[in-house]
Length: 114
Length: 113
Image: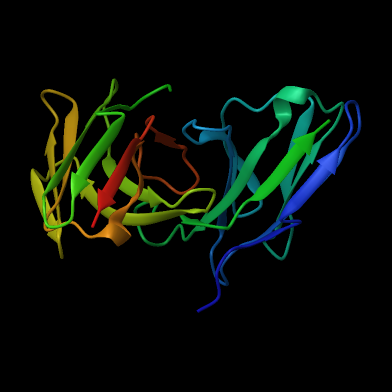
């Protein structure tokens, strides 16, 4: 079965650079979530989209933005990168039809900021 | 974490033993879910329990929910080395598409053979 696809899997950037992470949800999933997980930490909710509209917003820095496109894939754009942005970034998807937000996670994108 | 706190933070047991992890949360919920994460990998959904349910089973997993105490427990019976992972509870306040699922700090389970 198709899973949630994230790219790139690994990314190395310098401070103050920009980075874009991409997420392709499971086919027919209309909801996408972004999470950030630091080493040994719990996943922190950043932002979510339902049917291409922003649905909920968490601890996403103003330097970050995201959107969901017409084909339901999503991109997380990160600018003015800081050392503290180094983390695993997970995308997850779900179907709004199920009546419960059961998330299927991608394998994650590991961002290292030097 | 905004919501769940898990206890213990780390748990080491032998194969065949049972493992119990606890989770407490702060606000009202629509449902509570448990996820598993192998080191550096994506989280995998294990089980969901709704706010009007008290207990749920799935294979070797048993989840309880006490909404009056705002707490849940995950029991893994007859543990195996392959159960070694981090386990997170996650709360869903509204149960609506796109609303945030808030994760607790997680319990790291180590099962030795």
